[in-house]
Length: 290
Image (cartoon, rainbow, N blue to C red; front, side, top):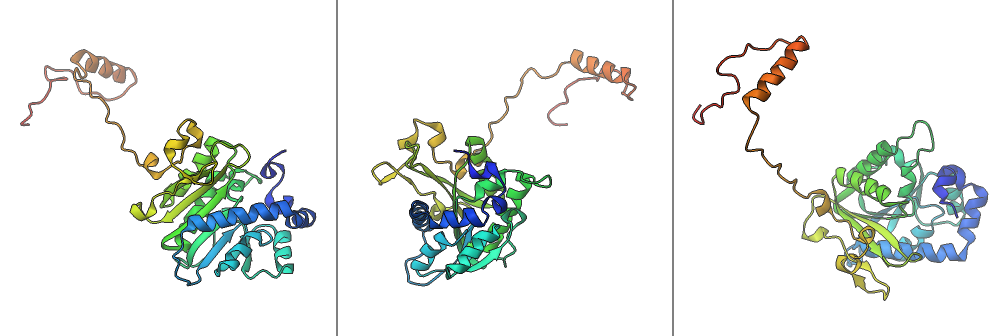
């Protein structure tokens, strides 16, 4: 079965017929509920009974937003498909709905959000649906605006279906460049059907409170990076991978001798460049106290 994002742009793929078929499928409803519950769990909001304002990116017909409502939170829904939002209005969801392209940035007030979730939407930005679309520019605009709209220390949990490892690293890379800390949490890493990836991002620099959570194993319990070390693609990608200190270049103790310098100067003269004349001081090493 072909990936939806390879068939057509989201605003065209999710037309009236597809939107209704998507929303009426009991299987999809169950999957959306499970993914939303897990995203809310990874969001790690304080358990103090205070409702938070959350953003549901790619909210569609409001299936994931209903999970946020059930947990007592207020939410904004953002989607590019007008047909999906029309069905959300018919279903009388509790959230406020916004029609827009996340690849052009989120026009929200800075620091207004307490958190954000997204279910199966961000990977659409990796496709150029129009001649004016450049995935790197769209990812930069999206993550930059998302970072600005979140409060300090707030989290964003984005469930994604990357097509390959390069696409996953592309998405994660632009999230890190926007200023986020965090990484990717992989649930059921050794299962081809149940495997799910969540980009867990925190607004602000890394700290003990922004440590990337562990993914779930086959028994439903948390599994660490060591449990999935057999498969490099299944490892949790952390911010430490991006900020690893560069290796120092080995210095050539022999250095560049006089013959090498004279040869280079002769090459520059043949090209017509102005080169100082050769002398007994050419390529001579200066004293340390100079």
